Length: 165
Image (tube, rainbow, N blue to C red; front, top):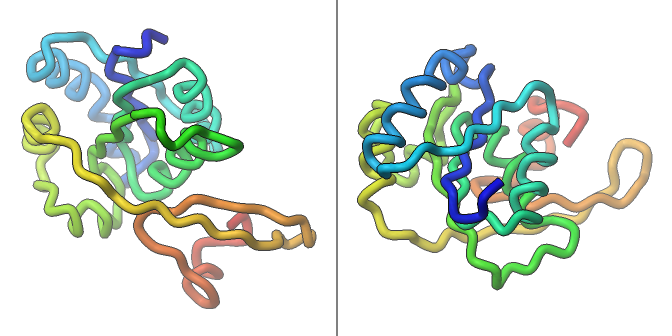
C-alpha cells in the first residue's frame, strides 16, 4: 500500500448493496479526476473497516476515502485512530455517501450524485471535523472505547443499532 496513493475503503453492502454496484464507476471517476488509479479495499464482513483502517494507518496513508454509510465511516475512523494512534499524523479522510441514511453527508452539504461527490472531493480543500471518544463497558462488563464523528447515542437509539456497540 503506497502511502501517497488514494486509498478507498468500500463497503459493498452499504445502501442496499448500491455501493458494490458502483466500484468500477468509482475507480474510473477517481482516475479521471485525480489522474491516478486509486487502491480499492472492499470490505467483506463486519469489522473489516476497523482492520483496513488500522492497516492504512500503519502504512502511513495520506488520503483515505470511505465509500459507504455511517457504519463504514465508524469502522474506518476507529481503525485509523484507535489504539495509540498519533493524531498529529496527517491523514485526510474523504467521504462518498453510499449508505442508506446519509445524515453526516447531509450535514456536510455533500451532493447526492456519486459523480458530483467525487468531483467535489477532487477540488475541495480539507476541513477539520471534530472526533469524540467514549469509554464504556460492553455487555460482558469489559471496558471499551470508540471514536465517533457524527453522533453518539444512548438508550433507545443505541438499542436500535444493536448489541455490538
